[in-house]
Amino acid sequence: MFFSPYWGQGYAGEILEPLCAKLAETYELKSISAIIRIDNIRSIKLAERSGFARVALLPNVSYSDGTRHHEYRYVWG
Image (cartoon, rainbow, N blue to C red; front, side):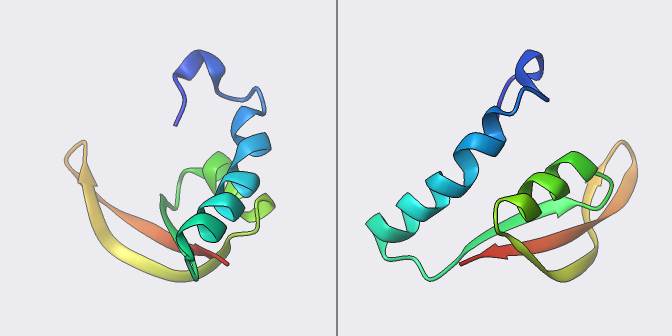
């Protein structure tokens, strides 16, 4: 979402919930999904603070660095 020099500055936290609300209103969305690796603690905290709810564990769905990774599915709305 942002380049690394801007990580941890609070920008994503300020924009995520209002952005989701505007997208849902504009496009009449019932929900918005996010898929987050289970080891990405900062993104998990951001999603939860912004109103996303964890709805599923997706085992071994991504692959990087020669390893398969589990991810969580989150839903807003």
